[in-house]
Length: 392
Image (cartoon, rainbow, N blue to C red; front, side, top):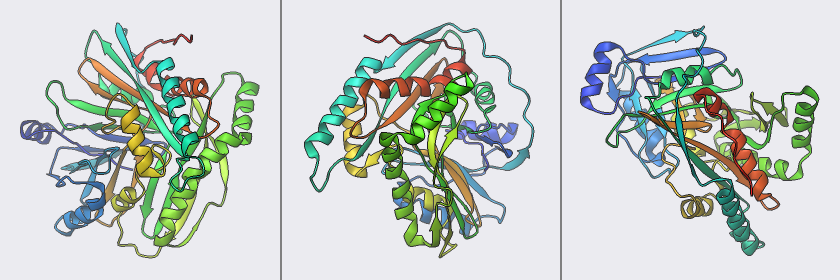
């Protein structure tokens, strides 16, 4: 796990280099690696060229070089990776302060009723194609909440509040500029896309979710119910099988020794499968493995191209770097990449939150809307926003 400083233009690159700014962080239970300043930027490109571009970069870089950054949801769009001028590790973070008392204006894209309607549309597509060779077996639909404050939002303070959950990896990644205030992606992801160390490879896909409860008996019942749910087990198996099938040709051994198990964050239960293996060829780098797997059915669907096309038709916004991946890779090819979910794009006074749910035959539209509302929870709490959506 590591992080680097990413800046969007030459002026801010010089400022970050001179001032030692830390503008990208990956923070988990094992500690935090911070990058400061900017030494180089990886030439951008689509996912299918990432592994080769990273290998070419490190062929001319110092032995201690690290690249880190973000992949967008759409594999054909440009990624954003940089080499920091310096990195350092921090074991203990200062305790975060409470969220500031800001006044917020909220706009749903769409609201719960609109999202439920989107789920029904996806279920109709599944029903119409049932039994056909290109049958849609799963699609992940997201929705967004745009929150505008009466003062600028502090992304580093927001990250500090999110990263107190030991079950997640907190991240802050600046995004390419589009005019106006600089954009950053801030989040707390529970999902490891892929990690590589030498010949060892790990992945921990999550799919199938339930809201957690403050009362212990109700919370355990929610986890047990999730594990028994035929719909959620089926949704999760689609993702785990995809990862196993994609990694298998590159591994001499590959297994999921613990099988499917509940995995908890502070706000949600998920079904998870820890996958571990040994690569046949250690020359494939972590970034290349991430590009090979992304996007998984956990954030897109299956068949992947059909699901992605329907997502573009149904969702009222482009995902950009939401449901992409954030992570790092070093000169040895080792690294780790995490699915960029449970996140918000922050720019100046505005935060655009995202949340998604996996839709399979048998999904209940209103239950999926409730799931996305629950997934907003950690970010809303960290921002200091209280929100109750009204159902018809």
